[in-house]
Image (cartoon, rainbow, N blue to C red):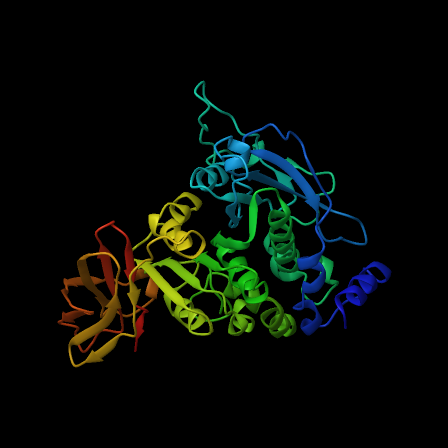
Length: 415
């Protein structure tokens, strides 16, 4: 079925339940080629508030709120300047964050951050010097429901709707809204349409996995925390998916990233912590193993889980810069080898490596509750070598830090 025919059927039969296979198929040709209708509320603002057309719900039109900023809107771009773009996807309970957009615009990017819950957050505020007053810690009560806001982002919209009409499914709308935002971003003045990236945090990382698997216009993707296999292991989402009963397989086929990541060829930077309870290391490792494109890892021991912690790592900016601005890349870590108690990791780096460590656990029980230990590793020409991995170790990785303070890691070792 063509994208136009798919869209036409949605208009004619908005309440017709679709199969799991159909529900997992986004009309990519339309989403990537048609610039959505939009309006900017104040074109003179450093951070612009805008609304763009979302996908219909129940046959009725919807709108998506977004913040947008760039060197052009900040007044820092020289005449005729062209800059790269980035799409920013919030996590569960989040919204469009003006702080996040401001941060990337200050880095020289055109940045768009959309709300995926049918709301708009508080307007940005500035100090006397024109600096952005941080507000990402605002309360949810300060957000305003849009008149045409479409779906909220609760568990019922994320899981329970499967098997009904596609326009009841939050994952369908989230991915479609992000791809539309990407198409819109690429159309803006000063934006180099061929230099764009996407990053998302938590549920935004989950959505990044889906988007990067389908929208190959991106040159780089950074899912923070998010992964697939939410229906397995210790995932905190597993009970909600299991509760779907006979509809469980349909949700997994349509919306779990494990069903889509095998199509991903966009270079990806996987950022997570060893003890994340939302996206557990076992599921995480299975997810990134599916990706067909280049993969880089930053798995921090006990990394905190929050929006601010998710956009804080300097390595994310370095990684994106290396693809979109010709910046010095992160160290390139090869496939880890284990022989007895010795772990060896090949590494290539344009920067000086200053520290390496082996991290491991021999504990059992829930992965998110196991105690870990660490040992120093030595850095040699072209490789990192760590001795002392216990035979009882069941999970391990090597962290490598360069002179910029940028940390990358090996993939996770599991047994």
